Amino acid sequence: MNRLVGKRVLITGASAGIGEACARAFATQGCDLVLTARREERIRDLAVDLAHDNGVDVRGYGLDVTDRQAVASFVRALKEDDLLPDILVNNAGKARGLDKLHEGDIDDWEDMIDTNVKGLLYMSRDILPYMVARDSGHVINIGSIAGRWVYPKGAVYNATKFAVWALNEGMNIDLLGTKVRVSSVDPGLVETEFSEVRFHGDTERAKAVYLDTEPLTGDDVADAVVYVANCPEHVDVINLVVMPTAQRHAMLLHREKSSP
Image (cartoon, rainbow, N blue to C red; front, side):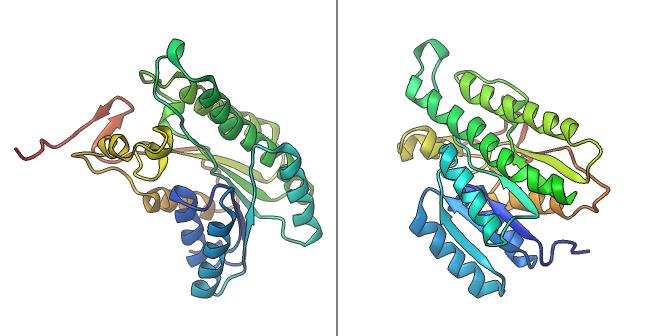
């Protein structure tokens, strides 16, 4: 049963990867969309394409979720234009660097903390009061198995995703007594721009992350997000972990042997 037709979905970081895949998946379900990303031209082009292909209302906006005032102004404008979402997908996030903590780049740390934690907080803080006031809505946070299991050289990224885990649970507790739901979808290895961003554009190093194995795709994660969003109103999937079959833990990934 499709319970999503006609709902409006706001997705952050929607210009590529999991965010773009979620936008495409929700559009095929008949949802109207509000899409944000820092790459304004790319997000506006995606909005035009999705509206044309699916016959839904799609708006694309350039937005940096780490800019607290920009997020507040953006949400006020949504309210004025009657575009407040029924579903918020906090997808914007990144990893930067793969270093031992005592050798890490502090600028990388700031970037991850600002995007993965503060960006999620800013958007949630400005959207949730409207959901509470109307006693309906759904926040879906894109977490990671990195928020469940720490791995070598990932301490700060792990910490940001553990924060998402805690915030997801905390939001749920704070919303007790309302019909507003909060969920997280926590993927394992997904082949997107993620590793290229982590390694500052080093495409060869990024490709090696996915070598000789079959990772998830953005579409796989989007399927899970749509499932969570489509559950009946009395059902709240608090956490959903999705990993490729080749992976069973953050540190356990099966790779086929390369041909000689």
